[in-house]
Image 1: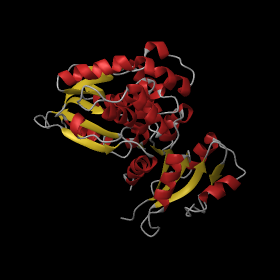
Image 2: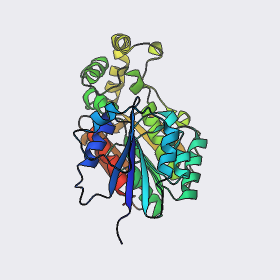
Image 3: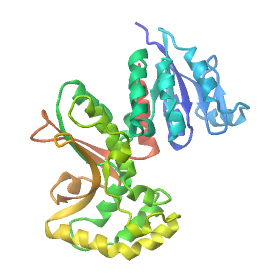
Length: 366
């Protein structure tokens, strides 16, 4: 049987979107079933299913020269018209937009496959997530979201395989934030002393590991969203209660209460040294116990709990010995992987690996 033609539309052409397009176009045309027919940025749109985009060197100029403005309603109709038994359509959402995520049920209901690193639909309101599941089940179109957790790391796919093959998930725990990974790899090494917490955060910000406003990382919301995605993947086959949204995750923010609401990143970093003593004391206490501090996320299926926060681990634990830089590490404790958990580890952020995760999902349609 010949491989069906797969039309690809990309919404969002920023860092990840641009990298994805270049990776997609690097597949030799002779072996690629993919036809890139649509690009949508925040200000321009390009659509042509009769003359696919093939040049990695000119697509940006072609998009910039287009007179068309973004119109996702029009794009939906154009893509839905291309769906047939002999050809598939995939929409790649590389944005972080809630408005775009809200359209997933419409696209899936029209037979359009949705692939994305956007966490909003899968970690936000439960009703939207349920409508995505229902639309996919009815039409047969797939939603693939590997890159929502761990970028290119095989985290979501591994969990789906464990669940689908009947393994029982006991607990998932991991360092899910590249930012938090870097900060605590530098701050807590097992020694009682070391650099000040505020200086580590400042350096992380200067290196681009944090958001412009570090509070957007230190509040733990990014980890809570990733935990929600994993918990919802497990929920239908376990006693774990359904999370109404990521806000239902028990999240212990690292933002000192006195700095809550600080308007700018600069002001936040400038105010953080006042609280270095608190963090230094936690580090010293952990060191006395032969442990390190790590900001982790836990989906504790056995006890019906999903939480994110600062926890202590022995200096011999993989969370203490195996991490470097901004790596992610996730441990799956299951019935089959009981004595020794299944571990996934590696770079959990960056445009190249995130785009790879998106492209890997697209290849699953072949």
